[in-house]
Length: 294
Length: 321
Figure 1: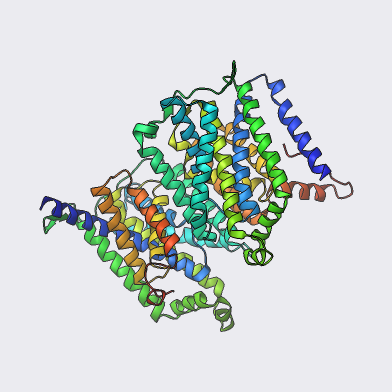
Figure 2: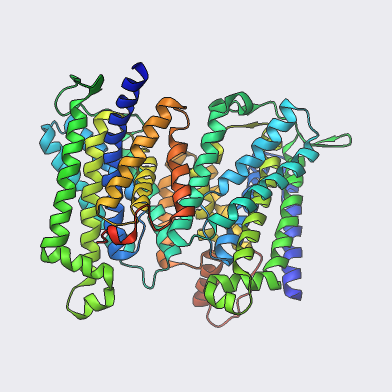
């Protein structure tokens, strides 16, 4: 019974971090599908979400909601600038150049945050207290509920946007065939910019809602980004249910592995899964037809 | 071909003469690390600049080399030279084994997979505390010796490291001008076309990956004997990115470019002491601006700039050291 309770506990916290990976995975997929770029700076958007919220809260003394809005807005602007200053000037960019540029942007953002706010690990207060809720012998924190809620909302929002708005449909058109999209009058350049903006917003939101649970610092972006990428790969780089499931599976496996086997190897578990997927099923865990590509 | 040989001889001569006026001071110490970093950058450049295959896990092979030698010589008392050879072969074998599944991937996926390998190795170095000492590092590694000669001063270590480095630079120069090197460049331009022309792309990619791992491991062994202390921090993702920055600055697909990049990026933080950890800001800016404005690196940029400044005279491209 003791073990069962423990396992339930690990699964709950795994699903919570898994939701975060799912959101980050979605933000990867949004850029990838409209540009073919894997943005290595994606994790930094996540980090910025958390760090900027703490900054707005502690230094600017904004209320929590306003702080979150400011953090997401600033990160979105950074995403926009990044596309304008580093991605757009490239003519005939090879994947290699894009990898190097996004890595450059990633360490640049990380370095600037370290310069401005130092290396200390900071915590964001939980959104609505820390009184645990007991479920089936395990405890659920209110922050877990926030994470599940926000994740579901973002996924529904993305779905509505990509399926029911003209901009969303235009972005999907770009992902299917950029040239054809251009021919029917879609401004591909603007859609690329949009994808960076939306992706930065989703990524930073993930960073905001995870910050109360795991603390945050200038260097959390690397791991979060890579795990989000792992989720996206598991879901076949789609922006649909596949990535969400990928994130949840990854989070749960990681949490179980850390709890039952060894916590030191927690991060290694995620990368082991990543390598396994890349080697065996680079097209994703689920059949291609089931994952919808943006 | 003849001018290539003269270029190398001039370069080797400069390398061998440089420490004499320095009389073993601080700069000699820095130049030891220029030598080590040059070979590491060169290994990555063979893979990335010539064959077009990115690796963000190069630091892992360097780290395995260093820890392999460190652990074998301190805990098991193995002869350092024997350990160096054995470890380098094991690391090469490891790279060869993972090379087949890893290098089947392309572009972004390849970058992520190599990064994953690098991170896993780094975590393993941190977690196997009873063997490696974990995050606090491994100390008391002996200096290398030949007979009664112990490599315990900066000057001796300089020559030790650079003799190895010159050997590997010469090997690389010969390699890139061989049938093998042409094959690598063909893979870079178009893997499909290369295969159609009879280049065994899959095997060659793994071979060059293995070679770069072997070179990195040898340098790792030398590094641990020079430093006599190592910790996992030196072999993380940050260092892999630093190596990448070196060859992007120096010049992708250029042997001397790798050395130039290693020289600049090793000297720069030493000269700008105030930067400390903030050097990653500079690296980030350099990676972005170089890729956008000077994708050929400094080895292409400097001669081009000189030609523009001195249009009438024929500019001689001197040695890059």
